[in-house]
Amino acid sequence: MSDIRIIKKYPNRRLYDTHISRYITLEEIRLLVLQGAKFRVEDKRTHEDITRSILLQVIAEQEEGGNPIFTNDLLESIIRYYGDPMQTSISRYLELSAQLFQDQQNQFTDQLRNMLGQAQQPLHVLKEMADKQVPIWRSVRREFLKNLSTKAKLIKRRAGIDENGEELPPSE
Image (cartoon, rainbow, N blue to C red; front, side, top):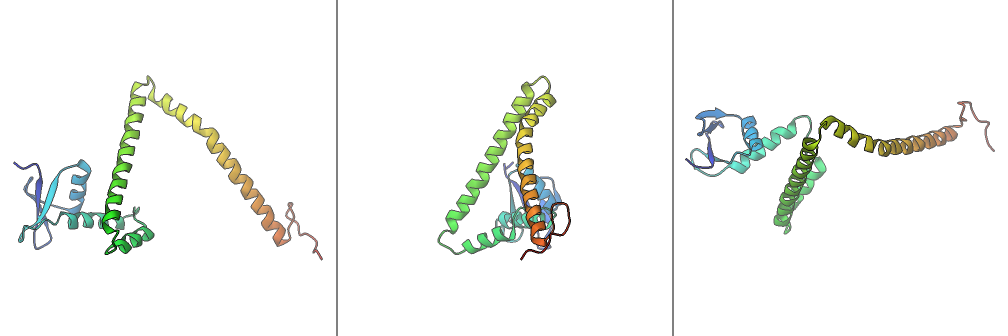
């Protein structure tokens, strides 16, 4: 049996997974991707590889959901590269960037898992990590509130109101 799972797309647009002998949905294709399964989608009549087209449909379906990854600006930028001499370069750049991001995410997950796995009390380790971040967040909050207060005073002065909420006498 082949290492690559074959999924056939019929003229009625249904997808048939030959590995499990049943029709599947785009959501099930997405799950195969998440599981790391190797598969190929073929047009039933022409035997043409249409995997890429099906993957784009999965992405389009996900993008229509509540929390898309691609902003309009990013999509417009990508569209502008089609036909451009840099098209091949941008394709490779995006591929390598996504791989680097995935590698770093996996590395961080592994480090966290190792750190928590070695700890006698994993929740205690997480609490210590959070406690180290508290001073940073307090500093950020303090700066934000200071800037907010300064802006509020400026707005009040421009509106002719003093710090106690009373109208200022007109200046000449």
